[in-house]
Image 1 (tube, rainbow, N blue to C red):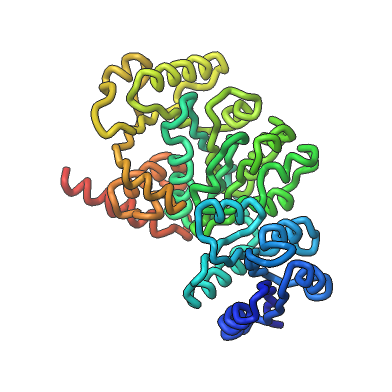
Image 2 (cartoon, rainbow, N blue to C red):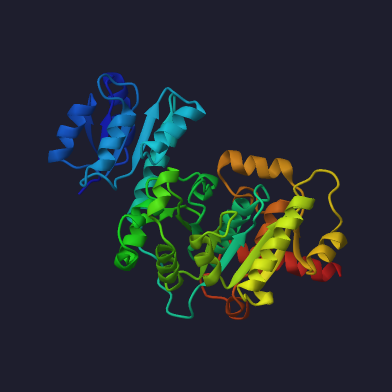
Length: 405
């Protein structure tokens, strides 16, 4: 049975063009010329994917997308917004309405076909890789100071670990008020923590959690922060503990992207972390925040070796000297991420972590090596059979360094 795709556009020529492109790949195309007609068609023939134009009379594509998300029959199908409007504001509006992808007109036929193929594959692969060995390792990335790269490091660690070990990695965004983990991977917020918070924590199971995760083609499965700050009110520390507990039994690695506070939900994540990467930049306010965090960790009786200091050299010029920072914190810096301003900006603009955008460039290679450094010891000693290309790159760089020393 062929896969059914709904195309909605009020222009006959556009309907024929899109239909002709997709029919070549064997899809069954059903069409509608406005939102009301589309809703009627769906009742009798639900599609596997929908392509919606924005500029339509009575009901525009954004509104139709919201209706499809509210309909139990179509709430989970992938949706592509296809429009002549190509501004950043239009893309954000499309994602806010529940779309999974955004394609500006005019478009290349090959690009449309590729986007359709990727979305259908992504939403047909709903299973989580089961792990029967020791629980997954939880790595929390944290700072009391904003702007030091917590989300940047979290997304790169998640992507790198997946590329190294050839198995999906969970990225959990606990910054409920303004988290950006999904954005840094260019994933639309079709499901978020808010979907889990609507029910009591004790009712959460792996199937519900699985349906909420956003899938990235690089093997990162994201539990995204809510679209709107007010939706965070329903998420409790118990929700966080339950979700992380379920993920630990199904993933080798769980990365926590934490907010800059010690709220109950943040503490729930920190309590469960096997490794805490405390980030700072080489300036006074950041060092002071790091000192406060270390003091709080001590009061919480976290083992000292659970926390590693990660200095992100965010300045193009000079900053506080390393020795001065270590003296003020009475703790050695475990890692210093080199300055790479333009590379980081490019990765944010494209929604692709540096470790994926340019794994052979200095920053991408550094972050990949960093992910290996914090990998599970049993993985390092006894690599699984399904290793990824990332591990080959890590090993090759290690061999080169050894030969040079």
